[in-house]
Image (tube, rainbow, N blue to C red):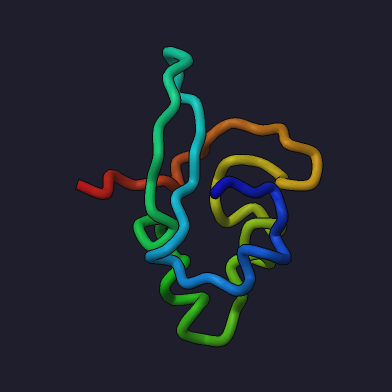
Amino acid sequence: MTTHSPFFINALQPEEVRVLYRDESGYTQAVLASAIKGISQFMNKGAQLGQLWLEGHFGVGDPLVNQGAPTPRLRNAG
């Protein structure tokens, strides 16, 4: 399933969400939300995934305007 709804994402755990983005070469990449630096720590303190996305913590732009590029917040899930 795919979504651009931060409200739907609020009902999921970081291990259930893959964040898709295009790399510098134009290829689609995917990373687990749990592999994004800081997400687990915010979630442990009560944050919701959708809100973290809206605040830019996913590093791939604003879901409500569907724009933006990845930032260094994404780390290699390895």
